[in-house]
Length: 190
Image (cartoon, rainbow, N blue to C red; front, top):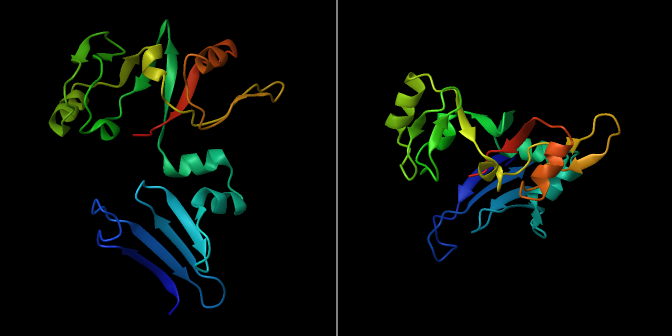
């Protein structure tokens, strides 16, 4: 009967026992659409149980561009230029359970709020929020390895310097800075 059905394989498809989720859209009339995850968490689509295609191909065929797809599936935050360094908003919900790779420094006071190597527990994050922590200080090294959330475009000429999804590294950061951008939108990829 028509509808949307959600299912998983009960861990029997893969040797690790990982649950592989799937959804099936069955219309009154027309083609069935299957959406499924594989063992590497890549999402695929099938139309009428035929060949698997990446779900991004289906979304692009439906009119979404790369930037829209990224903003649908990932959160976005921005690094803002702050003198020689950068400042990023403190978002406790994205940091839960993570381990700090370097000292976390309050961007407003310059004081170290969490030492390097410490686990960010829900209790610690709540304490930081209660103290009024709004933004963290970041260096260029902290930005490397992040991915752009939006295209970096010259507003006057329309020239695209970098596209959404491009990795920020030692080569791309100078391009962004020389173009005069003081804010870099990045994706919250864990």
